[in-house]
Image (cartoon, rainbow, N blue to C red; front, side):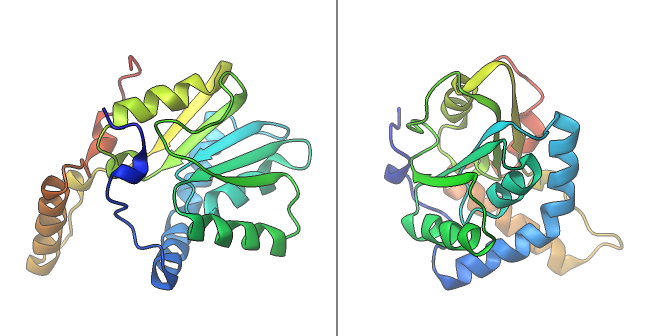
Length: 194
């Protein structure tokens, strides 16, 4: 069993181009993420954890949505990403958000303490996603909500069909298999028996 996510290969770039890539992805996914979180019951005053927060794009959105009576803790293994998140939150004058170094298997956060625990595109990067799910679930207060926004790369398509797109998808799935990851894990997250 892997006890520290840093033992795994950090599959995302954490340099300047990695930060830029995360900003672009957030712009694309932000409306869907906000819809999902609203549907999950996100509201003012909640205590929220964002696991695998990267540069804190979603953490910052959460902090803005829950207001000053709530709080957010973003957790990631990449110090450079956390530092960027702190700078971004500070630039926006947010006082209800903190960033801390930790991993998805052992976050270091207190158990039974969060109204909502969230991750986006994290499980698909992990060797042992079920262990991360167990850790995230342990963080929840009774009746708390665990929200995992993950991809399902096996279902993407292009219409009209395009050979280059199909090849890109094929390579992406091959890379997933090569690294022992599941870039289609989103299709498996309907079972809550973990």
